[in-house]
Amino acid sequence: MLNLNFHPAGRHFLGIPGPSPVPDRLLRAMSYPTIDHRGPEFGALGRQVLQGLAAVFRTQHPVVVYPSSGTGAWEAALVNTLSPGDQVLMYETGHFASLWHRMALRLGLQPEFLGLPGAQGWRHGVDAGRIADRLRADTGHAIKAVCVVHNETSTGVTSDIPAVRRAIDAAGHPALLMVDTISSLACVDYRHDEWGVDVTVSGSQKGLMLPPGISFNALSPKALAASKSARLPRSYWGWDEILESNKTGYWPYTPNTNLLYALSEALQMLQAEGLPNVFARHARLGEACRAAVRAWGLEIQCADPKLYSPVLTGVVMPEGVDADRVRDLIWRRFNLSLGTGLGKVKGRMFRIGHLGDCNDLSLLAAVGGCEMGLKLAGVRVRESGTAAAMEHLAATGSELRAG
Ligand SMILES: *Cc1c(COP(=O)(O)O)cnc(C)c1O
Image 1 (cartoon, protein in one colour):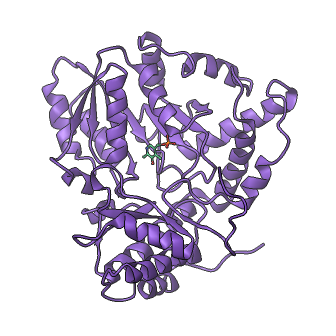
Image 2: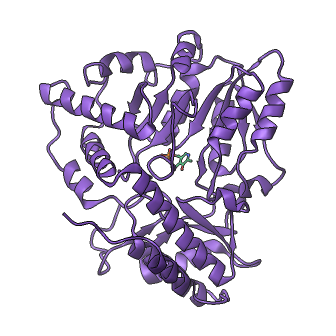
């Protein structure tokens, strides 16, 4: 049970790469009374959010909304389009790609996991060339889908999705393309239709700034066609009944009403800022964070500068330093949460999130907390990362446009 008497002065700094800080405006919207989800007001809300989502996913086609965490939307993507024993090509970029792969196994699919040996692949993105080679070798078209993670949240590597699309096309292969954008949507440029993605999987608690609890599947006509003949069992996740109800702005079962209020608010905020500005803000905060890590003389988990994530930065600890001990110390001393190392990189690195409702000073708080914590933990830093981040932020960016 959360101890409500524990309230250190000031704000908690939620520096994990999702859930990201929820704007007060969204929290207030969520406190409106829960309405009848079959009543006349609700349909207008439903239609409004479905329309707003299309602009964020950059699609003319349906977006399915689930009252679930992102993991549910992974499952929905697979069970709506595939049949027992189908071959699926996946790519090991990190922990989240590995979890999706494990889910495919558990669902009775035959996933093949491309990647580099050991934890090497956890510093790089998807190698589209290897996908093209593998698909060319599949002359019988046994592979039914290619599944990749756009922004690998466990490492801070953002893969090139159009390159994956080109690889599939270059191989002349009919496999569906499914992309996990749970941590990239509304942080990094993403175009469902233009990039030829068949199912885009996403979630509410990262770039969309909501609490956890809503997830998404954006569809293509090809994915919808595949769902007609797919034979994996599905009921709750079935697109057909949801799309039918969505025509009038409703859902076949009770949707997450109060989170939909917040979603409506978040979509308005993103539209007001403008998606290109949202992406530029994330890119710039990412640059400032990496300037700090370099000044400290520490290594960035992403080994390919072209694929640095605008969403989070993975900070590798020197040999012999337990990253979780540093993180724990930072939480206890400075009321700042940082992301733990996951899976193969547990204890080796921590993650600084700079996504969602973040600005220059929230980044500086995170970097400053890290710098003090590193020193207290006895990690030698070369020079001040906070100063380097401040310099970058002061030299770039622009004034607020009030009114
Ligand atoms: C957060 C995340 C997930 C898991 O989503 P849940 O909401 O925790 O189920 C999957 N993939 C990526 C890339 C993520 O960042």
